[in-house]
Length: 275
Image 1 (cartoon, rainbow, N blue to C red):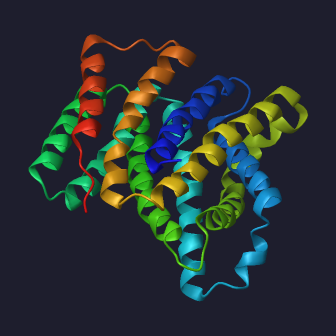
Image 2 (spheres, one colour):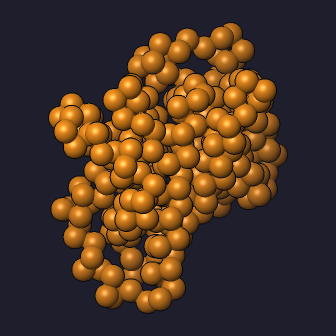
């Protein structure tokens, strides 16, 4: 399968799972949903990859890298759901994308790539409907999530390209560590799901669709694409979030937001991978 196809799968599930999570907020608070997502994914990875066997064979630098990535995963998922509790999915997605533009711009070396970035920036600007006065805390959580998402991409690339560490095994180990790191802040809010079979099943489903499928395909894409190419492909995420918002949450976009989606897709189409 070509690396761009892995990214398409990741892009679809990156917001499909969170859209379902928004529907779960009526049963479980945001931090509880975040922990259920992390714990469910960690359990699946543990059964699939048995990552603890890998730990003893790793050097200290790789261990620190995985712990750092785990901390980013734990924090990113937590603030992401706190933002979704207060803002529309498309708005959070657009804010999440902004630091990634900087990663792509840093590596851009051709006029074609600069044109692609202009299209992408214009598209994200139109997709972003930020009402700072109305929901400042939601904006703060979304901004924190955006910074952490950029860190996720940087650290994820390092893990995916470690010669002695298979990317999915590194992801499995980091997700297991993330479940432990997030435990103190999410376990109490997740407790009601223990006696609610529907909520527990939904939490597992969200973990699979939000963390297992997109993170695995992320690693497969990251291992095969230059960082700048991957960063610009992430421009698709606000468009994906808009489509998912329409289908799952009935969040119909305005005319400017539709134009924004077109510009984002145009930016991806114009982009040329660095040699």
